[in-house]
Length: 123
Image 1 (spheres, helix red, strand yellow):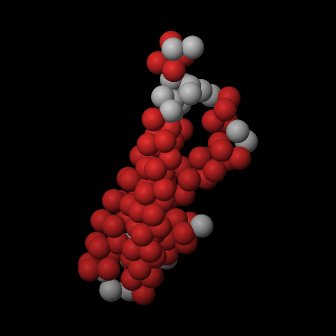
Image 2: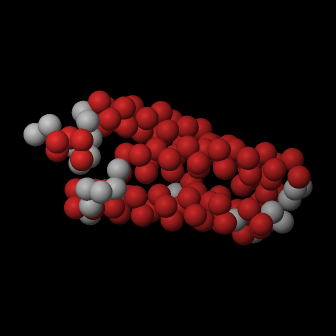
């Protein structure tokens, strides 16, 4: 939801060139939400889902931080400032999600990854 709000703010601002990053993050988050909701992670064992979610969180936090600094410092209209502030909030949210996902990824890797080929060799 936060990515979609940031996307709308960038469309309405002078910093419209930054609108692609929140749109892609929104679509990736939507895809992973539906993948987990429809249990695609159990059907497609070849994809390391915790790692995909981890990488999405890391890239989102870095990208939102960078474009928020640029939007707040470079543009003077209200929509750009709002998008920048929402971007900083999104950076914090993705950083927290990064931390939680990192802990899940560590437990997944300590278990040997139930869907990894190494896990099947020991059975």
